[in-house]
Length: 169
Image (cartoon, rainbow, N blue to C red; front, side, top):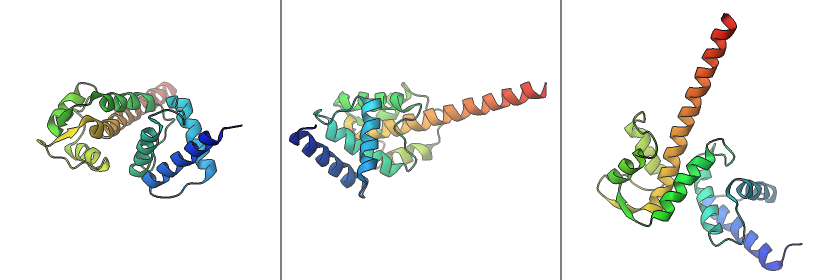
């Protein structure tokens, strides 16, 4: 049986999620979400950063309708997100993209996609304006997610081509 304080924290986190997401969710959806968070992020209601994690996940789900916590590349993208959250520095948008380019390959991404990452994170792109890396962390997550998704599609397409050639032979 859960303690009274644990249940209160659980309800408070659900309310934080609903406020950030912009609409109410059912209890079963909330319990499924927390189960996924526990599985993939070692999430705990009692952690000090639980509210930040819940708010971030809600923001990502609101920004990207098809966002899934359990996707193949989620953990890699989350690691990049955490890295920028922990930096505690200020970077201009241009410096941030340059820094991000050392972690993931941005060469095949259009400028429009880059601007969309900033827009979806609620940060207007200004090349020389400086932002906290904790604010830019969501941009980094979206960038990593976009790049990893494209890589997965390329691999799937190559695999299909190889299979088609093997069947034809």
